[in-house]
Length: 398
Image (tube, rainbow, N blue to C red):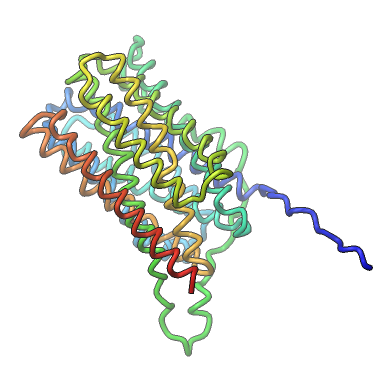
């Protein structure tokens, strides 16, 4: 009788490249979280309608979309490392222009550049994290999104606090530039891996790379819906809390951090819940939680209950994007570099369409009535998640 040697489970070792990916995701979350709190102040100074406010969210997404479409080509020319630092610098400088712009054309131009900058951060962050071993991908993406969510708590808190001081809200223009300093100090000189050519295109005889699999695109649609849900709340909550609930703009900006904190807690809880249920089931449970929680935020006449509803929504929303991202990257398999570049298209599509639709509806019917878009999107996402789960189960059973 021979003894069987059992190998110990492999440990997830986070390299400096992984930590840089985490840092860029945190910087991405921090930078993105500043836009919503800034918009009521800019709208008041420039005199914007809800539709014109929506233009800013649309151009933010368009800038992100442009990087999603051409980012992989730029990376092949200048390398991931240069592209990463170019994106960070563009983000910091564009926000200064955005806050300082005194006319609609200027604020629109700078928010577009800001979107391109943060789109670069997202792209490089996903690529750096994708360099981890496949069996640890879900854990790495979850951890990165937790850090990104934590940074999104800090952004509104700082913005609202500074807006209440004698410095005034425009002093927030320097926040992305100041946040850049620790990233530079810790990771300066660290090279990122060179962009990989898709395995499918390794041989000239093979011609064009094979298309990404169906499951990648299905998870992409789920990502569109997940981001739409998350950012319909993030982008418009400051305006909603100010115009409907009655808080001061600076107080509303601070209260948005409640939502961001709930997203982080939701992601932490999601890591534990994955020990009890599968990723597909957690996606459906999270969506149902959002659907049930939303009326408390949307329809309550008590300000404290509105904030509680905002918190509860965040708990459910927290897991939607990470689960969509990890599912898509797992489906892409060997084509992860190409998939990471294409994946940025999905959040941009969500923001280009849904945020502008709510802005247009808000001008016609008010921001509270315009929010009817949210439960409609959630219901559609539940149906999409159930359908995707069924298709994946059918593929695995073959």
